[in-house]
Length: 250
Image 1 (cartoon, rainbow, N blue to C red):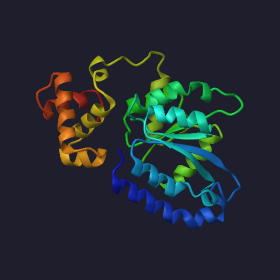
Image 2: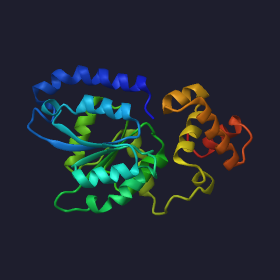
Image 3: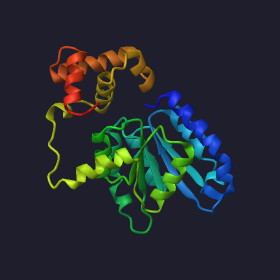
């Protein structure tokens, strides 16, 4: 889900921010602490986030658990009761929305609420709105720098909502309407992974580029594209691109 080159950029930004953190801008230097669980189906990405923000003495962030799918996430979150969960949107077992649904009692705990911050490669409006409706306190993409991610975690811990300006616009538009958004039955036929592949195809990515970005094989990409075309009754990627553009999925 996360492009390795994208992650390297984040790491570099975080390194340049370290002097600022040591002067008191980071949570750790200010004496604050926050317990966090990382939920993402890519172990390499979890390892990178842990290395970048999990240095408790410098950042104030203590990573108390990790999970790679919905069932693991619910188990770990229930056992550790973190203050903030960094939650990927697309997960095996039902996605981030399913984690939120099953953890609703923990979010509603008046004494020790568990708060969720979505951290995803996706910037699609449907993903943002879905997890916010599910109870997440914010949504940031994986292009975020390490220092900004630490700051976002502390803001969510304090009860604030955290979005980039573009993603905040999606939420405002969705909740400003008194009518619920219409259900797209065609789109609902697709799995979360098929939707990801659909968006990347519509943006002009080659199969090899999609495979690299999603950490899957080219053959798997081809299988997803075939499934999407079959479910949507389309003939080729050009029709698929027009279909996605008409629904503002690109």
